Length: 443
Image 1: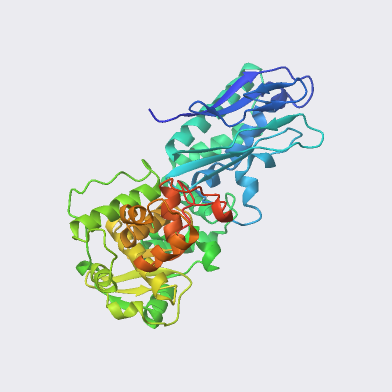
Image 2: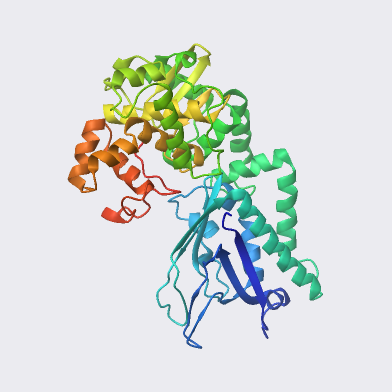
């Protein structure tokens, strides 16, 4: 049975503060299965505690205010990102855990890190836990916790609070398809509700009519990397100026009935890897290195484009003009990078089931992009062959030699080994690593 996420409450007495803070005060814990993300050492009484004394009201208020961003926004390096995703930023005088919450659209991560001694505090969090769960399960846990806090407020005779206003708005937005679409786009852009600007959002919604809603969501999530949100006109101009002809209907597709795990049921890297294994099996590729000729044939594009050192774009993508005609644009100027990008675009078609005209391969950490990277790595360098050839030698030199054999980057081999548990993601200082969420495969 999958591990459940639960935010627990055990009410305690607080003699000062606002009425809602006193009502929601208690031992507030976060559990995932049998793991406590809030366990720590209480130096004041010299004991280990599963749940510290915190303001349940302020936690609920923070979760409600940031619900859309925590539900849809992937990891980002923007300076303000932490305030919507890191619990330690809540403040109000409490010792909050170093617990970060973010999503790839299908699955949600709760990453708890130990904390060192903090001046003026007696509680030190001790657990190092990475909880990964379907985003729908995260919704259930947050909904239940917020309603628990609201129930306690009513039981204590406290009338409508800011939390009630925030949460009523979120619930109404989730029930309205058009408003939910707007809020999701805002979250993917890293914006608070109503802060993205009507012009930007209207433009994105208009673009979705020509490119497809799923594709536009990917463009929004990738805006940090591209520097701007590209329009259908700009994408078309770049495709004809710097892209290469392709024939979408002549590319490789999996046979109907090929069983792949549903998006969100498993980690993105696993879904991508299983799809690539199915392609290799159905295309009769075995475990041998994939030649440029065969890769180009699968993607229905001229093999010469892999050697061309033409101008690169801000992102790789395929843009269909009709069933039999399209353009492929590369970001990389180098053959290894182009092979990886072309395999990503092939995987997007094979796995995605999208009816869109645009198939973007971006640097963002959405489920779709991580699936692409994993598909590409497995297609170009199947793990079964990689593991057998390395035979337990995971040194940098051995990885480099294998990368050359399969014509991929060393980072691709490294990430395959991380995803399959052969090496630790913290090796060589690559802190985010691969694993379930931040597949480090190079684009």
